[in-house]
Length: 328
Image (cartoon, rainbow, N blue to C red; front, top):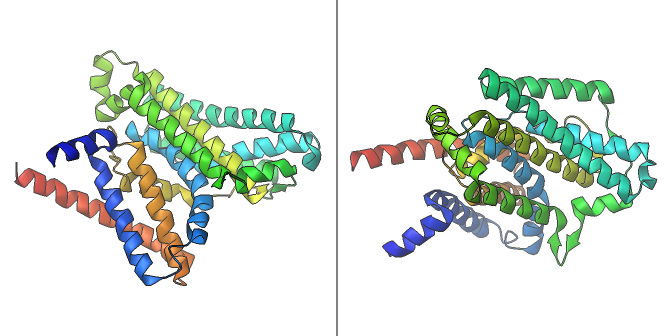
């Protein structure tokens, strides 16, 4: 038994138990409460609704692991989406070709990376608090987007864009496949690369990391560049999903991404956590929302439940820490 537990922890990490327990609880409770819960329609809905929130959560994950935060992820996604929309509009709108979409997507990801680059440079070289820096970037991007769009939205895209937000390949939603690819890539970066190792080291103790020879400034800049680029991918998916872009799309996702990270075992002070438990936590949150909808609950009630869940997670962690210290 101990060998199985050790093997489980080696693959998924000790922080996987909490999300799996939450997943099992949600499945049991809503499975008993609603006979329609275990249907293809429910899980199909989850599969299509999860990706943009999931990718934004990955964009939030890496800064948190360094002990920071990126409050600008949703507006970075929207500015990236607007960039793609402007390129498509400039090349014929609904008549734009695939080349325009590829060019626009590359520019969108570049804009997202540039946003992260600015934040990373300021945080790394001035040692300003990431919350203040990312909050400033959030306000800047929101104001810039409102100015450029005059508070409106942009719509009217080629028909081949829609499958990115609504299409399926062999029964798997395209946006879910993109999310799984991003999850796999982030997992590899954090667990198999020097950047990932350095990210954890900085989150554990940035001064110790600096004295051990890690170029902490370079790592912080790269982390925020990747965060911005990942957020831009979410912006592209949101454009395809909603068939329009505006500055306020996905605003409510910001705090939910933080909740998903903490529910997935990420240390809010950095240095500890893995990608797979966070992905499971995202599934839990989406199933909770879908289950409440099946029971006829208002969507705002689901948001309230997410807040209560975060409080419960923090209390359980506090209790577990106390228990461990008492039994040492």
